[in-house]
Length: 347
Ligand SMILES: *Cc1c(COP(=O)(O)O)cnc(C)c1O
Image (cartoon, rainbow, N blue to C red):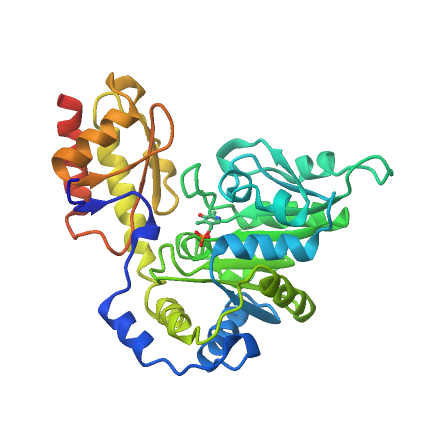
């Protein structure tokens, strides 16, 4: 296998920096399951404050944050509204169905978003033969459609419609901090309309493990139950929580660099013959482009750039390719990716 020199596969490939590893090595620890790990407790307090919620819970992954939140909000047979490209629907091994017994109801909509009207129309009447519509989920940023940042106004309208219909409103905020940096809207403003919200420490923030789920005190007490049930309770987890604290202190503002690089990459790709990409609509650190007009498949494109240049993209469909920028890219990563793409198209 060729060595990967420029890894645009995902922002999950980021490795802890030397300074982050030092923070981990120095972390004060205790028994997390007994709520006695001071570093975990500190991380939870930091995130609760950041998101303007009463309490927060450290979990091993973002996927577990979604499962725990749905576990608290829903009973078997309940229905969750979410976009048809949402992570829990496509990439969580059917977790809400398998673990909670909930039905996921996919809603269509441009760029990974849906509207308040769609919510109002989707909520089922309270009749005994229909599944009770219990929750809605918003993905900020919407990943697989290109890191799209939901505008605050649309979030507020969707949640108002959800709450008016008695739904619990959940935010999958895997890349919430990208949305914060891109939009200038604060994290607590984005989080305010939601009953539960989480952010991932292992995407653009660059920590090795973990995500933090936040909500009311009562919600978090119930979340502890599901965390235990799913086997997510840990012991001296301060070792990894310290990386999360470091990431929140040092890796948030720099997300702007990732967004700049994603836009530069998109603009460069747009100039290549046969590649279709809407460079003006790159909100954050994810670029989705279509190689249909080049005469080669996404697979072939990805194979050529990787084998010959060590530039790895992620292939999403027959002609759809994704690139994600992040803190582990070399300084000339965008230029190298563009020259690899140019060469790949030449044959
Ligand atoms: C990555 C991701 C998740 C899952 O997070 P993990 O920490 O990888 O389990 C959930 N939702 C979205 C939108 C994601 O991008």
